[in-house]
Image (cartoon, rainbow, N blue to C red):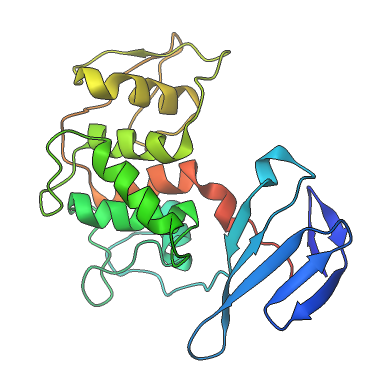
Length: 231
């Protein structure tokens, strides 16, 4: 049986040990790790548009990092992406919250956050889309905040929130402005990016993305993966 707040309870019938079907005929597939633990499940259900293709991951709480204080406004985001193995320690027990990420590292994190990591075909397609989303891709180069926003929007394809009027105050390249303002209208900004009452904000688009900022943007954009679904 699976249960969450949206679909309620669903009884499952086993087709084989890693494939089940619910009462409506929708399939649920589980992915097994080499050690036998179940790490992912995939659920295709027509009951709700937002769950049309739901893919979630079993969460394992990780140890806290020695360089992330309890008072950090990024701590929750860092814990969430760590629990989902989207991002982890840089060295030993340190997350390196103010360190940078390469474009390749950020793409790896997005693929995992998007929920298709390890599924043949889909991962390759998403990697191609991300690679084509920014000019002058260099997987070894540090990623900028504006490139990170564009990559997130490439996967999420969000619409600007009609009730949220936002205005970017500082400079960003033309290819990144729409992605930045769309994410901001949806509340997908790091804790250090403040929206004024009139919707204006400074994004520091061309600054290099910090790891703690990446954790916040990823968790806010893909946070549904941290919902605990009972199974």
